[in-house]
Length: 449
Figure 1 (cartoon, rainbow, N blue to C red):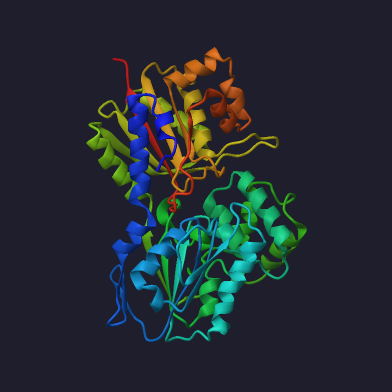
Figure 2 (figure 1 turned 120 degrees about the horizontal axis):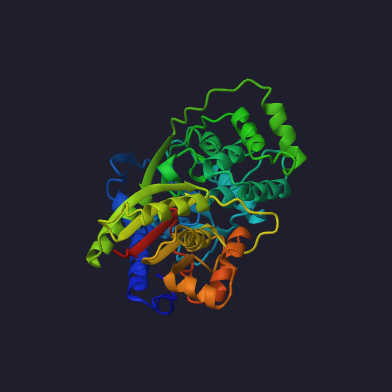
């Protein structure tokens, strides 16, 4: 899974940390999850998803989007059999999949592009093209990244406006729930509107979660889930992060108009059936199991790490220094932090930034024990396609000191990728993993008595 594992595993603890990360990613690969949760009885035309059964009266169609949906589609075709699928269209960041009936549109992440819009409209056109009716079943595949990969803005908003909005939101420091509340209000498909568009045709949505708490309204901006958020909430988020003057005027005007209107009750979407089939808890459990196999003593600290990465790194460094986890030598975490980027920021991603923030926190806490810290995105892209995350230890600090590299300066500039490139043998490379359940972190510790 980790392509440069042999170069990175320069110590036994680094090797262990990388193996633990690999175990986490491997446990949530779509081919395993789909086959665990979806069964199809060809003879009786019965589809079982978890504990719910669907009688297929006529045809099956596949739609969806996300970083993991290519692999999800491959697995689903194998379970259903290509001959039992009439047509399908999904939006993914890449197209290297073996599919017979499901078309893949290569679309852009984290900023949407023309293909994100074109592919989404192509999915919606299936309704008229095939005269899809309530005797048919639509299976919708969703995973993290779909909010960018599948878009259809309201008629007042151009693609360029959407691209600008996404850039501003991603740099604002807002968390994914806040970002997706705003995205839902400027979309014709998010916030349950895709489900409304296909109603009363039944939709079974298979969801791979990269969102803390697995909030179905937030994952992929909930295209088949009723939206309980309001335009006033969305507008207050723009005010909270002081970005009203940074986003396109067309979007500001739309919000100012909508907040004066009476809020409607969310659509019930009785045609939509949503199934959470994978999340970080599965990965974190597999990481604990692997750590035990490696004769370590692991503890799962949280599946909900979030907020400012420096604050999180300082918290855990402080607790480690105080020997809060003295009965354990392997700490496992999951979640997704949200760095706030300065105007002239450098290169990196939240995982690389978190590892760098941890190094600085250990310096400030004057931690004297041996340690290894590794953090990576389970989709293989830590905001940078070629880098999944970073790994470091006490030797990283010595190298930085010997090379006279100012760690604090790189942290302040959000330039973690450049820092670790200068250190060498620090950047984790996996390529696209085909899954996406957020970020995973492992510490391996040897404290001085």
